Length: 197
Image (tube, rainbow, N blue to C red; front, side):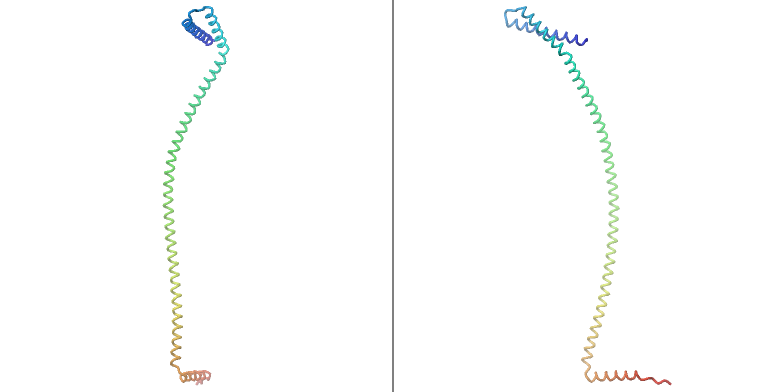
């Protein structure tokens, strides 16, 4: 109520000031001044602005209070969001520092694991090389033995064929008959029983 009275006084004061200033302007522009016209205008002005102030006071106060509440609420929400953002920023910084630590830890573990894997692969490669070397040696030994056997067979065949060829060249029909007769005589002596004492 106190606010309403002070508000009405302010409106009345502003109205009188405006009317007085309009009277002075009118007095300067016109040579005749009519007090009744001025008082009529003043009463109309006071009634108009008084009724407007009376009718619009409550809605205007409600509107202004609503806007004030909205601004206060927006300020509170902004402050809450700012605090929340700062909190999230701090959490993000902590997680980021932990992330760097985690990355360093993972990098060290990866390097250790890579060293182990490199050693394992090196050992497997050495073992595979040894196995292949052994397999190649066995295959070479097998090929050498096989080649030696083939060479021996070839040598024997060649020796036999050369011996046959020489024998055929040296053996004439008479030598041939003599060898056959000797072989027959030997066979004959084999069939005879031996006399024992």
